Image 1: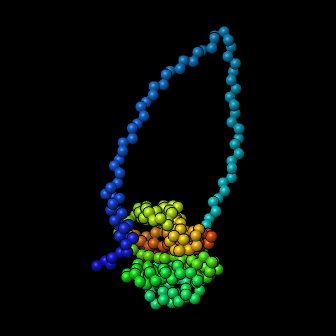
Image 2 (image 1 turned 60 degrees about the vertical axis):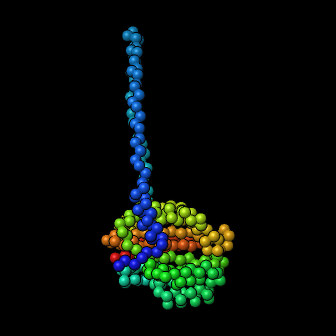
Image 3 (image 1 turned 180 degrees about the vertical axis):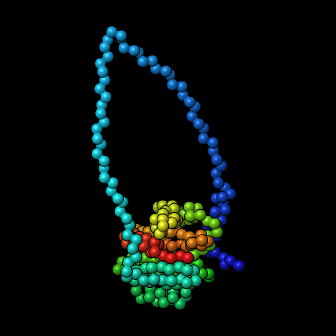
Length: 275
């Protein structure tokens, strides 16, 4: 018997059924009527007036611009990265040593909770951990949780950059439909603003497609951070080898820190192994 999904997964599936049942009816597009073109008579020159010969211009050589190759993104795996493995789901993550990546077991999160109390003045991270520990079944959805404690801006922003990994059955959900439904759900929240939601290629070896959603979060409204604090987010969804499971990766961080986080996340996504 399949375990129940969290509320937002149920909302995604319900939204999928609603969209498939209530799609807009096709509207016939009227074709423009043909417009008659009047014939134009060209008068012939007088017979007694000589017609001067017309010189035919010769084509001039057009210089050919040299093609400039587009820069190739660096997809190499940094030598100092370490590995996190979830053998039960056949998942392998590579990540920088500065990130604390852990399986979502209560004992692991308790240790992180104690670390947060020692190193972080703000309450936002501790609140997230309490919610995970106190919500029945919440931890069953997560494969990995990653936190960037080693960040000098934490003391000022009271926010820890983090990423989460969740695996759920795909149930035939296409990537573009997933991106659209999650975009609609996020966009309906007052604290969220969707920047883009699309299917992209090039983030995985062989050009495999992924669903990619970019969004921003009002840090003051959602996390209780200082007014004007913007949190940037990037969520990526990708299939396993048989397209039976969907891996959902979400990254959030302070706006000023996000370019470096973005680069790290790209490398992590490219090199993760999902059987």
